Amino acid sequence: SGIITIDPGYKNTGACESAITYLDGEKGILRYRGYSIEDLAEKATFLEVIYLLIFGELPTSDQLKKFKSDIDDEAIVDQDMKKIIDGFPKYAHPMGVLSSLTSALIAFNPSSVNVASEGDMYKAIVKLLAKFPILVAWTYHKRTGLPLDYGDSSLGYVENFAKMMFQKPNRAYEPNQVVIDALQKLLILHGDHEQNCSTSTVRIVGSSHAGLFASISAGISALWGPLHGGANQAVLEMLEAIKADGGDTKKYMAKAKDKDDPFRLMGFGHRVYKNFDPRARIIKKAADEVLESLGVSDPILDIAKGLEKEALEDQYFVDRKLYPNVDFYSGIIYRALGIPVEMFTVMFALGRLPGWISQWREMRLRNEPIGRPRQVYIGENARDYKDIADR
Ligand code: CMC
Image (cartoon, rainbow, N blue to C red):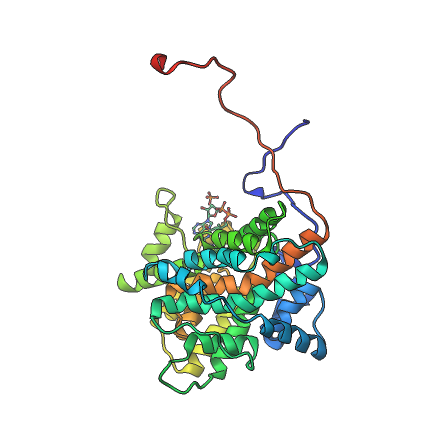
């Protein structure tokens, strides 16, 4: 009852109070639990940031050791899960595979569904953090055809993930520090972003007291879309198309501004950032560094920089406050690391996992009510039923 106001896309509707991520879109500020994204990307490891996001404080070395050891204890996935992967065609999009596998984890870990206490919650969280990187690597190797393994828990969280991804079965594995550092940074930058589409999805699914894994699986589906996490794949495909078209950035700028053309400049614009996206700044610098230290020269990077420069000077983009977002340069780094384009959004999901988990945990600990928006009905008035012969 009462007056219902509609706010399509929830542009001005707050859904919760949260103590996790602070974001000022006008000033381009992003902080996790009070720590600036610039500091965290430069100084922390992804595992420290995972702990920070979920539990609210940076871990002491003892806390981090215990946390890692709890994760290592769970770093296994039931062999039968491989049969589920086998059932997918090789060309299946990795995001669909990943969300299905995450959902399938529920069947193999039913005790993780009911989280009556904070202790139960911790167990479910640790299980997911341990198994998710394995599922990501398996999703990738569904495509490469290489064997699925469980990694090596004696390595760090990101180091172990890199090994599961990049190790060739017939070669000794040599970790590449440039690759590890770039992965740490990218994953940290994607760690959380307050009430975005996938996080809101996780919270709303979790608000029905569906378990953590089901809520995260739904979040993965939400992230898949090209207006959200799927933009990182779309950016690279767009840059490739521009390159194949002779590098004609002007043509694509014109298309993006044409209101009769559905084309948008992928990797540009953001619901909240109306000045710049601080993550994009860090990623642009990292892209330069990674390409240089790996000795990769990628014409796509030049096209991206050219496009950015043109857009920043263009009245259409200036008027609408459209700046490059986190996805504009991330794909260029992923590509330099040898990660195929269909996997980009999966990498985003791995980075966003701690954000989803911490938002889900916060929601449950605060005993938030079930998410259930209202509507304004605009359909038919009451009418008499018509027998099928009379319709
Ligand atoms: N290219 C061309 N025009 C654009 C773009 C773009 N990338 N983004 C927004 N606009 C225009 C839009 O047409 C509208 O113009 P007008 O006022 O004349 O109708 C105006 O700018 C405002 O756009 P909007 O769609 O109302 O803004 P929104 O807040 O609903 O959408 C967005 C935000 C990110 C979905 C949108 O900017 C977009 O589609 N960008 C491209 C996709 C992309 O890069 N997404 C990744 C987002 S960041 C990663 C993440 O967290 O998911």
